[in-house]
Image 1 (spheres, rainbow, N blue to C red):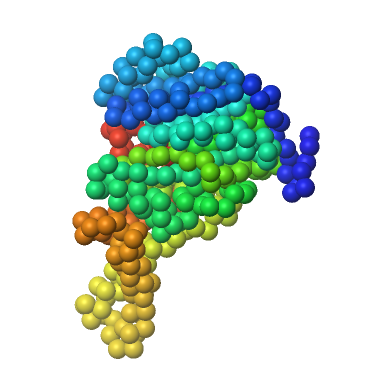
Image 2: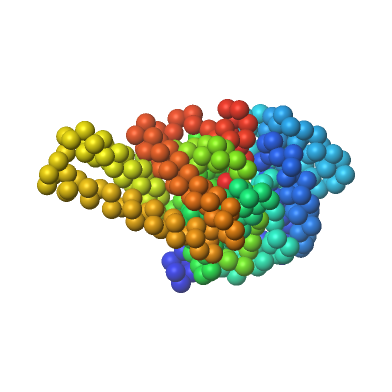
Length: 364
């Protein structure tokens, strides 16, 4: 075992031409799958490559597209993922794959040209166990573009490195991730009891084992977010619930930024209670004035969101700006409410139903 100057263990570097396995969980992605697969197959890889698709029980014709693509290119391998859960699908694909470097990809995303070659170079240079880059969200409709702007803004998702970071270096987690199989064999694959946030949990174990997780801003992946308000709210509620579950399990090993949305929800609840008490004359006089201080954080939040929407971060026209005003609080409040529920009662069987009935979805 080698240890570098930063006290971290060096991950083994396989021969340059040893090859790469891409793994992709898939569920109801009829509009996105083919393009996602094409961007993977177009990657320049020194040595052999394979793409393993873990197919969930799609109902929109996605699996027909996957079988057609596999019949056209022998590099595509199909495995069934009847549970449809993200970590289960990833583990099935990883176990079916054969090459020493694992590249996680999603059917709702597209790899930029040169992504894999740059990631391999960064892995070799840093001797990291996992490297990830920037999630660049994009949209086709006015609503989806508003969600994309929120994803790309530090106000939207709390400033994680892969949401627009520019400084290369050690990271808490990695978006998707390019990983060494030898390290996964050592620390274990994805925890199938964690339905959301499974990437963070895996990277925690990688870091606890002494390896580096690395952020490289030159790596870019295009991500297509949810396309409706209700589905966005459902996605963020489920994601927040699982973050609450991860806080129950791992406590302060979670970043402080995860606690901002639940604090916002708590502030809204407190303001509602105080407002009702003031309206019914239960709180009056000095006590009423003191209680009014509860409104200050909400006023500051509203002003911040309004400033973001009115500025460049809100888009170009008034319609874009109105969607931004709707999207940002939806993300924050849904995530925060889910977090509090997950923290108090646990995530249990919470799933993201924003794409298929009561099933989970293979999306970040």
